[in-house]
Length: 162
Length: 162
DNA sequence: TTGATTGCAAAGCATTTGCATGCTA
DNA sequence: TAGCATGCAAATGCTTTGCAATCAA
Figure 1: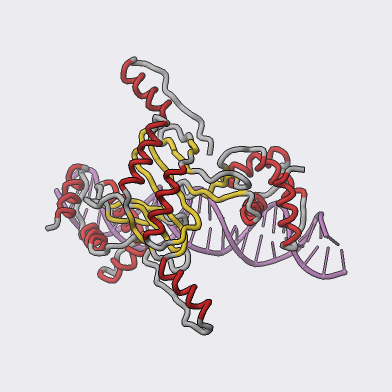
Figure 2: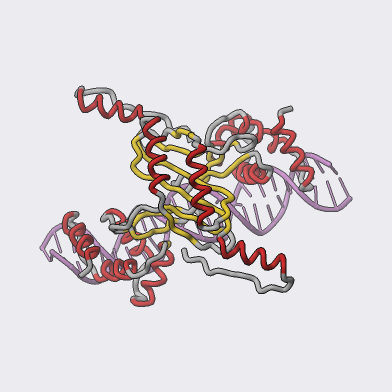
């Protein structure tokens, strides 16, 4: 039993809720997928192992995981909610490639420190922050350069990873 | 005629579009409202001056203003799109008070520099970035302190400004 | 006159809710 | 057994689209 599952069961008990096969499965699939998942994404994955599961249950369980501190909501601006692992995961920010959809995670203590300083100057108590850099990743830039040079180069397409 | 209106008319002409009373009015109301407006907000304001206007037109015109470089889309994570002035407005980021909804704008050259440095390290070409700090503003923190000290203190409520 | 624009109604999405049925504690 | 959970269908809220009528160039 992983630590995360214990956290989940503890939360379930504390809140007077019930353990179900669906919740177990959804948590399981979520834990072994180290990606940013939308509810839809997770629903599709879970469905492969239990086709009878409903979209609603996935939505509700993701809410539950968030409350339990295992997941965190992330919004990338496409008006869909994504979720990522939150338990004992260091805070990080995102670079999002607008060409291929790739998401690069990064962390900078320097950046965090400056943010805190700015907040302090405004006497603002930060509980959470979100930083997103939108642009073009190294690989897509390289491909763009190549295409400018060789006519007929193969188009470069990445699969978005959520 | 303000500079912004000229920019708008130029964009209209360049794109082979047409100038209409509705677009003029929507731009006008947008320009004199120095706030973060949702489409709904702007619709309500415009409606006061022309009750016959449709929601759809406001949506479409905000898209147009964004294309013309006069407005910028901002998403605060509530899955609604807000717009703010973009023409000759310095880039800035937002602190959002989760107690009263107040939005504080700020800018830090230091922060921008570090972001650029991080992006460069990943050979990522940044076209746009978004930084949001969520937390409690100075005023709400003060009120919270007062309430802890004086029982029966008046509750503090701010009007959200978009 | 031609083609863009408007505003209504309807459609589209992502997400939530009502509710009868099913299942856990 | 009591009451939470499930999954369907319907509802919701924001946004977009289809379309006939209208209007700018």
